Structures are given as C-alpha cells and as structure tokens.
Image 1 (cartoon, rainbow, N blue to C red):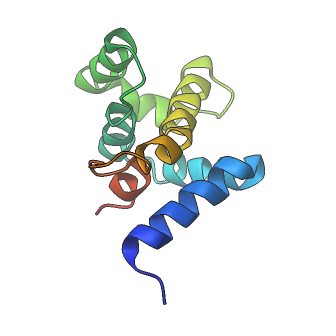
Image 2 (cartoon, rainbow, N blue to C red):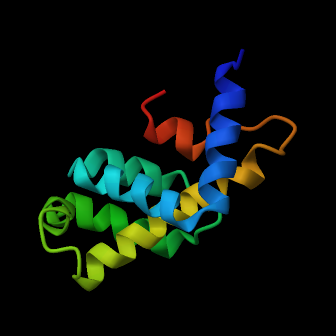
Length: 112
C-alpha cells in the first residue's frame, strides 16, 4: 500500500524519466486554464531566479496570464510558461531528497 509521499515521489520520478508523460501532465495543467494554479506551480520553483518568477507574477497582475492560457499553444509566452512548469516538476526529484522538504511542486499543483 502506498502513502501520499510514496505516490508523490513515484509520480515525480515517472514524470522526470518519461518526456511524454511529463508533456501530458503539463498539458493537463495548462488545459485547466487556471492562471492561479499555473502561477502557484511556477512560483514553487526554487531554482528559478527572481526575475523569472517576477515576470510570471507581472503577467498575472496585468491579467495577461489568463489571455496567454487561452491562446494557441504555439505562442512564445505559452511555450515559456509550459517550460517553467516542466522545470518545477523536474526539480521535484531533488526536493524529495532534502531532509525536511517543503510541499513539492507536484503535490502543490495537485492542490494539496
């Protein structure tokens, strides 16, 4: 039987090892078109510099993030947001090895 940590760790490992699964997971988050969810997932990334996180926050404050999420998948801004989401998941594997990890990006994006 799996507990939540085992499931989360297994999901993070699975997503980091299989690019197709990672793309499907990220596309699912983007398909929700929920800018608050996307923003909170991106802000969870500790490895990103402050400038990158501030850029996404500014988009949200100007109500641009919702517009980007509702546009064609081929816009440069949407591709950048998708890559930032991927980074948050790829970093998950590292955060599970910390002695006292905070809430992970996968867990955070799942609303836990």
